[in-house]
Length: 189
Image (tube, rainbow, N blue to C red; front, side):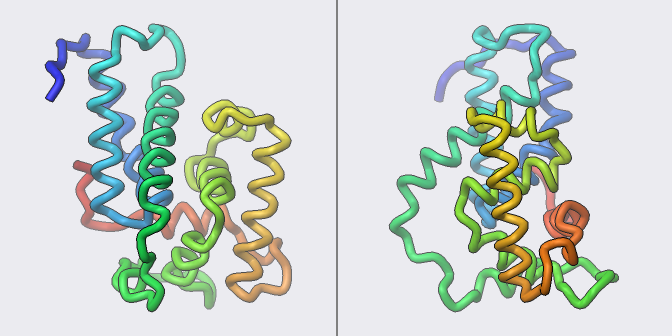
């Protein structure tokens, strides 16, 4: 285990303040609470160990999300040959929030999100669930703004199809996605 040097308290507090957002993003990418927690922990450890490389005054959140995203894609490439819950046993165990506003259940939305290609899922979650601008999401993903807009549009269209909606505009994806990703009673680390 690498030896971690102290970090100034204000920066440490900013990092800790990002934990819920990092976990929500990791959980949405992985759909696996254990893997999500591991990603967040690895992200914080990697950021802490490389704090000398962080340029003070720049966007700490973007830096942390980039680290998490890179860790996810590295692990995803290794895991993509694993069997993925084909019978939906794991998905059926996911928490569903009460008081749904429509016939769409959050479990349905979670199942649909998992079926999206990772790049589309990432884009729609950054813009929809995290509330990031297209520009910010494009910077985090290292692609053009038009690419992010296209991925979000394709993701929303695919979600509407998977959820058997007549039109993607029948879906309020940002609010539904955000609500579906919030799991009550789950600790960040």
